[in-house]
Image (cartoon, rainbow, N blue to C red):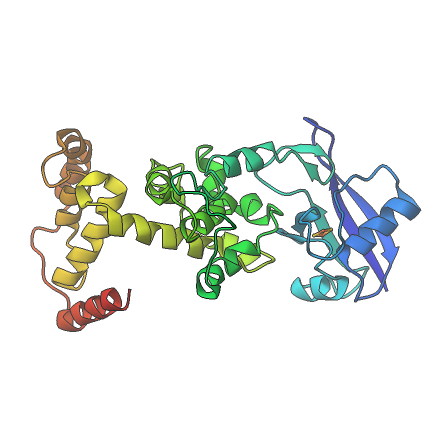
Length: 325
Ligand code: FES
């Protein structure tokens, strides 16, 4: 079958252009096989990364039909089935470089920020506070199994490429780094958990910068589920910190307490407790005063609060989930 590969081509700091390459191929051929053939048979100037050809090295991540994926994992048949095609004409597959990283050439991106953000979470097991054993640091099979999911990460950059939080917040370290961060928190040999949690709790560069769009989980080719790992770090932070410690922590704790009290959120209390820190943060209170005033004038400020129906049921659910944790 003939397929038209619409490839975004670009030189560093230059506008991108779309180039079409028509290839005779089979549904079972991987996208990487097709790119190799385009390069070898049609255009030797096309640039892309590859190495293992077997979903191991993470080199060949790129945007295929609009989402980041490994070119050596996805095949022509599945890609054509994913998107509706024009019934007449040659079916098309679009290929573009990953997002959130500048293009060096064609499908090759500069991954410096990706690696620097990984470095920022100290992705090494710290045993500095422990006496070095005569032989190795041992783990039970159960302790080791805590690392299985995050250990699958091949650092391809697909999650980072699609991260909406990273796109708008250059401080956010990204889902790949935080998935690795949880791998360190979960490692029974690591002795630096308290410092790590402080670091990952800071501002919006760590876990609180995540907008929970879930796209990282959706595109991860190794089912590492970065968002799930970010959520586990948040749970660790919340279990070690008080509501007064930061606005992000208050946001979570106050939300649960208000829902537990009334079945849904009393928004008046929510603003005052989270932003105003229970009337202790004058600057915070002043920052929401204009909004409160505008809402009052427009008749949108709730003057009273009625608990929701089934509040007892909501409470018992929250209690049951906490007991399960
Ligand atoms: Fe190694 Fe695709 S070439 S993961």
